[in-house]
Image: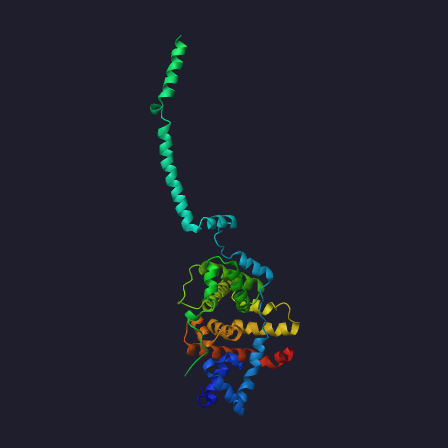
Length: 144
Length: 196
């Protein structure tokens, strides 16, 4: 924006709204307003007249947060869901990561089902004639 | 007529990454967010309410809402700092309304009766007078001055916080400052003397 677009009247309105501190002035008009102040005695008079109110406003200090307050605020902050420990991470890594670990677990489960079925058929009394005979033999012994 | 320094659209929100990480429970991101904004929130609440205890209560309440909101924060609606200022103002307004229900002039008494700690007595007295004058302003005028003068928000962002146009914000500021001059001008030379 050029200086020509800033009039004394507009500068007055800017100062009346935003005060005399140039960083508070509208960015799009700041450069032109500053140039007008630098080049115009009337503009500088506007600044001088408005300055005391800014100085009074600046006398009100800010309440600053204490370390205890910062801690209290952080104590309320969300927490991440705890992740697996380093040992488990290393173990899973050695297995080839989550995908391979999943495949290994699935294979283990299938093997367990198959072998469990096979073992259960192997111990039935029907398929163990020797054991049945031993039991009958035992009964016959007690009869004598 | 062009107004204001660019407020930055939501897409340019400098806090967006921190807010998302804080929402996921990232401790360092939460700490960084607190370090970036806690002082500004506390300062605004302090100037609105006039005492440390209430300012700290409000600041903690503001951040409780930050933590609740962070996980579901959606970019594109408002900048985080804009939302933060709006929440702070709303909580302060609620507290001031409750005070007025207890005693109509309580806000002014609190503002003028409790000089901030750490300031020398004369400066504290001036600060108390100015804060009492601020407390006498209509709510919207006071909010506009707090956002632009003390929080140093650009006029576009301040207008968004207040839900008004930039032109309306400028009018609020000008009327607020004019009223402050009327309230303080008769004592201006004494007050200025106390500052120097």
